[in-house]
Amino acid sequence: MGKGSILIVDDAPESRILLRRMLAGCGYGAIHEADGAAAVFAFFGLDADGGGEPLSHLDLDLILLDIVMPGLDGIEVCRRLKGVEALRDIPIIMVTAANADENLRTVFEIGAMDYLQKPVKKVELCVRVKSALRLKEEMDRRLALTRELEQANQRLRHMAMVDGLTGIANRRCFDEFLNREWRRCQRDGWSIAVCLADIDFFKLYNDIYGHLQGDDVLKQVAALFQQVVNRPGDLVARFGGEEFVFVLSGADAEGAGKIAQRAMDMLAEAAIPHLHSPVGEHLTVCFGVSATVPRPGTYPRLLLDCADKALYDAKKIRGNRMVTLLPSVDDSR
Image: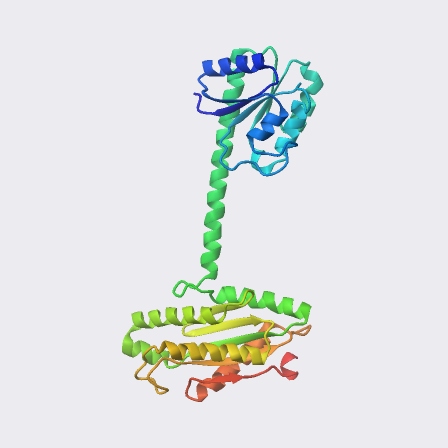
């Protein structure tokens, strides 16, 4: 018994001494004292009126709080402590010499856990403190489990949105992002662009260099594209296989074309060997680019289909090409 950290709050020194002795007799050693509201707030690092952010390193398990004190009484101190989110789960046992019936309802309404009436009996004090600390321990355990579960869920959500090989956004993340940005651009009257990229003759690369080397190339290309698409609100994702996709909110066809060209130039500067490519001695990509201002009744698939057609046209020209295709009025019907 006795591992809990307890704060005694009472303006009368003799009452604090008595409670400390009783608690020590029950095996509790980590005992702190405060002689009123100001001392309580200072103990937690709060402002003089109980506002502000509490100290982050405090480890307190229980408060024994006298109701009748000069200035702010214990009921108001309890109310203000319970209003601080970081302190809300610390159990509070109210202590007073007043008639219990006068304050009982108020005490529990403001969030106190229990109530002791003076003169405090040692047996009653120890039993109620033990019960409060046991409940606090169980609350802490459940809170820790809840946090672990939330962290695990966050990791799962992250994994569900990230490509396992390259570490960039995956197709699912792309689909959700494009739908969200499409609606936003439609609402704000902005243009939105999609750049669809495909590594030229990647099957041939895998056949010659091996799939492990091919995986390394996909990682390199993904990292390079992330350097190009680096504005907040834009996205680079792995579309599937050797295909990648950019979503550029607020970009028109000209701006998107410049970004795609920059990606092609940076890949050329990287000079990743692809000695058997019909295009040249280094790895190259093709881009299909499309952009539009979303209108009511249109859907993101319109933009993606145009980018896909543009990419198909670029691939027909052997490779290392960029083609831009804009949705027509008929396409939106």
